[in-house]
Length: 145
Image (cartoon, rainbow, N blue to C red; front, side, top):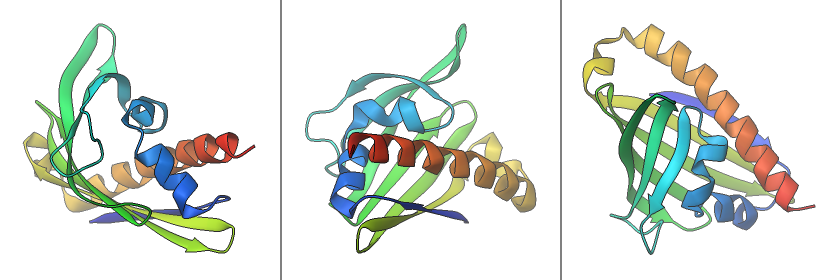
């Protein structure tokens, strides 16, 4: 499991509002290039974001599904990007006054990416997820202005 954290200058409900808007995922999730559809009721468990990964003309259409959701506190996702594989992402929000710390944990669940040695997986996921949380902070803090 790879874990990265970032403090965001906003209360947890503002951070979660961005997480609960599936149409924003291509703006902050590194590698997501476009959102094709977001199921009604997202982020209720079982709902999906239908996204594309990569860049044109080499796009992979796949989905991200909600495993569990505690509004304002936690969101767990099953991410897919076949033929690379599937992964687990957990986002936990911890509010302290006017700021919220977001913990993002991720690991590969199945597919060819599972064959990567753990240190190589951790290195790539840490860099990717640090950037994702940086982008998430920009979105949240920009909305709060």
